[in-house]
Every structure is written in structure tokens, then in C-alpha cells.
Image 1 (cartoon, helix red, strand yellow):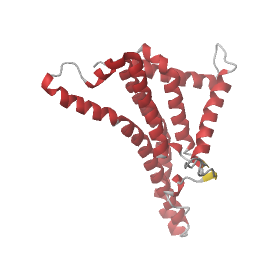
Image 2 (cartoon, helix red, strand yellow):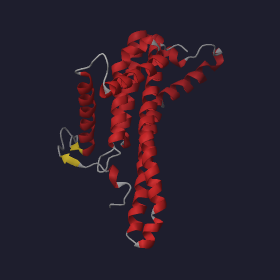
Image 3 (tube, one colour):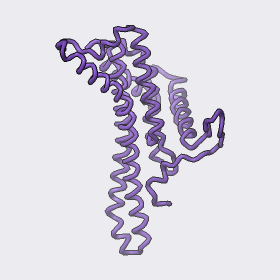
Image 4 (cartoon, helix red, strand yellow):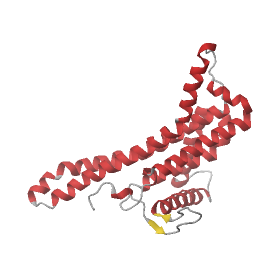
Length: 250
């Protein structure tokens, strides 16, 4: 079990709460680390900005850098009007980033390696786009599916393609994050398992473990990079989708 690369993704019930209206509302390890992630992000931002000064210290600088990074991303993708969604995008970015980083610690659960979590976040993004789009533009929001300049005969085909593309967004958004975190952690666990197995074989095994150990170290560094990149990709795609809610016409 120690070398099983899949065991790390198992959902375990911590506080069983079953059969509540036919639903299983048990508090699991995934629930725990989602709570820990939100608490860590909230606590960090509060502690680094509660006594903020004109000349920022190290921790305040990190908070301000995160703020400016997300704000710049949102302005570039959706314009100045997109800043009304800043709290939403910033919360998503910080949650995904910290959840990814927590998954790098031994015995921690990687929340974003669970497809139900990433899909729920994706549905939240697309739901926000649809609800705001109709609230802001009414039926004109449907213009998102009819690009300008399309010949009349091709409109039905183009609309069908645009609708399918729009409906695939939550799938691609969720699977991209889930698959990258899952694959990376499995690969890392496999090479770490090689190191453990080889070192148990004595001097010859220890010599043979050098290469998988080097790969484990390299993959660990790569996974930290992926943790940030996947949070960035999730946030930037969210900004692009929100731009469609603000400016539905092509």
C-alpha cells in the first residue's frame, strides 16, 4: 500500500453523516483539506494586510503581488469592467494555488486531484457567466453564439458549433486541472516507490536508486511549477469566459 500510487487519492470519511434525505453528507479528508485551504488563504491575507504600511514588508509584498497579478490578468482579458469580478477570480486563483501546493506535502490530500471538486469549480465559473450574461444583456447574450459576418446559410451550423464549444468549457476546464494534478502525483509516487523498493535490496539496489531519486527530486520541482501554472491557467480561462459575459458580441 505504501507504494500504491492510487491510494493517495482515496476519499476517507472522517465524520460519517449518512442517509440525510438519501444523501451522504459525511465530512471527508477532501472536505477537511478544502476547509484548511480556505482557512490558510484567509489567515494569510488577513495577517499580511491587517497592519499594512506604506512601505510593505515581505509578507505584505507577497499579498500585493498576488493582488496585482490577478488584477492585471483580469484587466487584460476582460477590460476594466472585468474588475467587478475581481473578488471571485482572486478567490478561485488563491484556492486552486494553495490547494495544489498543499498536495505537495506528504500525507496531505490533493483537493484538485478530485474531479468532482474541479468540476464544481468549473460549473461555478460557467454558471456565473450565464447568469450575469442574461442579467446584464438579456436575450442579447445569445449573440455569443452567432459570430459577426457569418453568412445566413451557415448560421445554424455555426450556432451548433458555438453551443457545443460553450457546453464543453466546464468539462475542459475541470479535466485540465484534475488530469495534470493526478498524473503528476502518480508519476512522482511511482519514482519515489522505485527508490524505496531499490534501497531495500542492499548496496546494489542503493546504487540503482540514484537515477529514480534524481528523477523524484526533478519531478518534485516540476510539480511545484505545475501547481502554480495550473492555478494560473484556471484563472486566466475564467477571465476569458467572464469577458464573454461582459461582451457577448464577437
